[in-house]
Length: 539
Image (cartoon, rainbow, N blue to C red; front, side, top):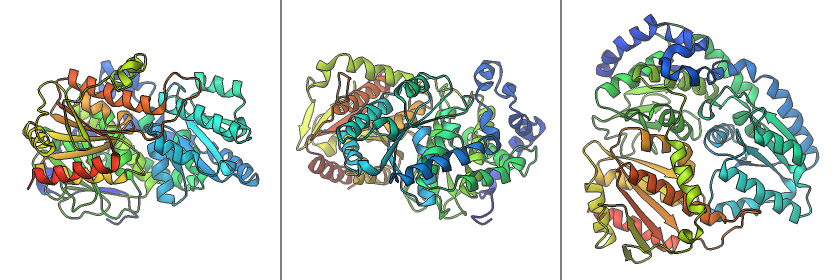
């Protein structure tokens, strides 16, 4: 295969042999054609109600065509007014897909899927005279995006700019956000297909509007999806979605519940981050599922040295330790992975369209925001080492030097477990934090994921609570130098960020999972000390 062709190659002969009976089962069940025909019975009676309103993504390559002209018309209008900087406020599927589309198309899109005050302040510091804010939310009630909208509306007004003319909304028809948009007189409201869930929404208005306004060729994206739609909806052993779903499920049956994703020169920017949400939220429930592990490349720890609990998957041509290789242009890949994930749900016996455990962390965060005293320094660290305050859930060792604490924490992970590094920091200014993933994986020999908070709460967060319960969770939080008020709300961005970290940690602990939180009282110094401590663990 080449990167221009869309296909799935099961490189590992043993895995191919184990997948063959599952391929035959899906073909015999006519699963692909039923999926393409929006048959909601594929996942059993318990899932039928939800599935019946979540399957329109299978034909978005056709139904999203009218968006092309609408988006281009608005882009032309904005450019005529000197507005050519696009900022996106969105979480989960509302931000991950447009970021991949824009990155792959090499067009500039500023993505705000954070509550870090520093990162939001950086976005505000851009040229507001040239800025349009796209706010994407199915309901409008997402705390992060609502906060971004309020902050930018005030910033526009303070700069003497008509905020309503600079805000574009993407939402579901009849949503509270659609009503608010009409009331506030926002520039334009794009209504997405309500019968598509967030993680399957790449080819809806949620994926296409921000990227299209930034200059991406969305017509080409839809053409790429249309080119493979027929084969993906066919009951054939050569259907790449059937092959991929069967390989994942066969590996899972053999104890490989982790899917390690590495780009091998596909030309697609950031695809593993998008696939993370799709796979984790769709399959991670009822104590089972596939944990996606996005790594830096085919030579990265976790991919090159994958053990029996993980399946290395190349996004691009097969390379290194890859057991599966998936190729194709971006639009085709979106549809292929969505079909494969839905079919894998059938084989795993789960509903791939619900996310029963996502709301728990949101509720915990809101409860903390309602009790602001807990967010004003009322916590007492169990231990302090330099610029790092150490907190642990029940049973987590917190005594000793930071390296000793980390060594004990990593050692407590179960065999074939995983470490989740969760950084509630600035994804740009604190970007080096992501290096922790490879360092931890190399020194522990455990599959290790990395997520920026609260971004991952709308992605892998579902798996953490609903999937295989064998994870240890390392949270990294940091002191806020300059906070940002959220207009007409009783909390700041920094308080919201802190509440999200504590809330998620609380829910994980309630699930019996070990949580170690390291708070950097000085971000730069604390991060340097943390990296040194991780390196000492494997010394």
